[in-house]
Image (cartoon, rainbow, N blue to C red):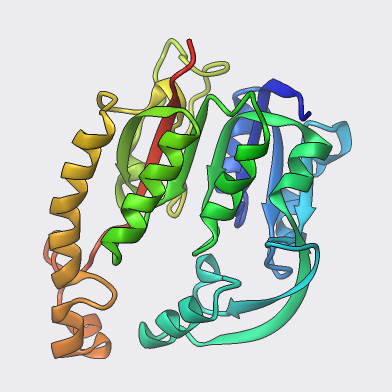
Length: 276
């Protein structure tokens, strides 16, 4: 059985370490998982001392159903869009970001839990395969206190499946966080997670977590009702929305940006476990 480690955070889909940096500053041990080989040297340079002293462990691999190797679709223009899902690579192409296919090391999330333990907080953002991590939690009894995933915004059935899975794992309270606004978040003082640090959140980051998240915790029903509104907006402004289909991506890019128009945000679902 994998031991629960109260001072541990997993950053699955670490990218350039935008969130890893915050977790380390707050005093947590971090397991950073990143599949894009082009980003690994940057991560190693940025966190050289933490890698050397053991506060940070770097897993250079993609999360997959089986260990070995897996195809990875790498975008040279949108590094956050790297994915193992060919259908996501096709979506990226429609949005103007070509991908090239490479082979990378693959690990199961269950094997990481066995090696490093169960974290206090599990952040997942791996472009289409977030649920592989959640599925692995069915095999452990003491689950992370908090988890976050980038929720599906195009398939209502897929979104409902996410909530069914989270609830089956014992997660009872939820918050929806708009990822385009995380750079505006302010770290609470006094701290409610780890130690207090003055920190500016970088673009493309997940931001605050756990009891430091803004807003009140919602029930599953309340959260799903909020997603109904988000889905309506995404149906028009989203990646495959009416506006994009009718006007085209290139035309939209030439339009002046007015508020949030012509762009759909992306959202993380944060979940809190029901145990006391």
